[in-house]
Image (cartoon, rainbow, N blue to C red; front, top):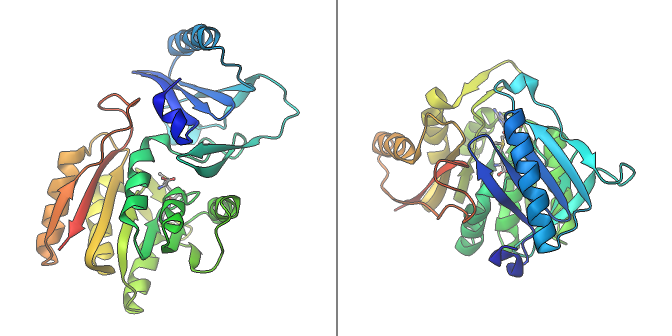
Length: 293
Ligand SMILES: C[S@@+](CC[C@H](N)C(=O)[O-])C[C@H]1O[C@@H](n2cnc3c(N)ncnc32)[C@H](O)[C@@H]1O
């Protein structure tokens, strides 16, 4: 088993290969694959490992990784009791997150952001803004360190799961706001209200379409997003830029950020948290932190 299991973490990748990966999610296992060869190879490898380690998974799920988003499907149960509910709880460094295997293609927690969540916690912000919040894992990391949080996502359903994660960790509902709306509409609104944040997470999808039909394409629109976020960034604000778009690596994010900082007459230092140990280079999201000064 991995070393970090001792830190109260039971959600991590067992392997990543070019065409797939295997995740342990508490007592369950999820195999994600791009093709049949990867599916067979990863499953065989998993069973050999489980036998050697004496790990007895409660259930095993699998999920095809299609090229097109429209073909994405929720994971399928391939081994274990189908009468157990689709939900379970995993731990990450003592924080609890609900996983839902029937809630869609993604199950509720992006493991590759583990070190960034820890950095949020270590930073102990006072006012945190989580854009594209999904199930609010970053908000939770800030809240447990004492922050007030604002979580914004188009999906009311995802934010409900975020609220459930707060309850799961016995965090009070006061001081935490959940806004089901388009980030591009919310940011100017927060700016007009003169709201300021000392930590902002910008983790947009590669492509999205809002309820009003407005499209977002990360390669062309990240710059506008950061410019709008800078309007609500306090003097010493920390801003996380994150993307899964393979065309935007860490260097490209930094170049884009430098351009925006210059245009808004702000200065910043840059750093990246280490990639989680089980993620080889070029896997997982590209991420960079800005610390304004
Ligand atoms: C990549 S996920 C974010 C993952 C999240 N940061 C985490 O670590 O768990 C992208 C999220 O962005 C939301 N989204 C997409 N377009 C949006 C928009 N224009 N405004 C607000 N949320 C949006 C989606 O509903 C989805 O939950």
